[in-house]
Image (cartoon, rainbow, N blue to C red):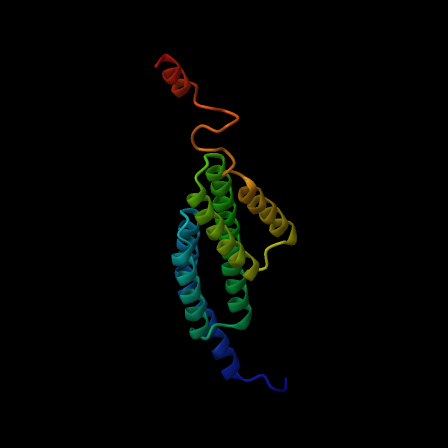
Length: 165
């Protein structure tokens, strides 16, 4: 056949041997990224994913293996960002219920940052809509109750003390 030489088969064999050598390391790195994502360490996840992608690219592996590994990394990062967004949004709603305005604002900012990361990894539109609704709910929750007595609900214990005097 035209274009088929022995050097091509030697290159293919070398590429396969590199895959067999690097596959356990890549799988181990993917499992570490998954563990970090489950524990909520998104900054470490992003660093690990970035360094793993660079290592795969620099290893001169075949294009199909590189694309498959990058797709696995992207899917894992998408899942991690989606989970982190959901956790932060739920925490914001809970902080709103407890009338902790500062914590609610912090969690809303965190959820928006995580949502931006999920969008970067191509999150589904339905997920984006759900998160925006959750953040809107968190934004409108809390901060309604007055701290202390009001005109409509006076502190009766203070009024009783004044009447007794």
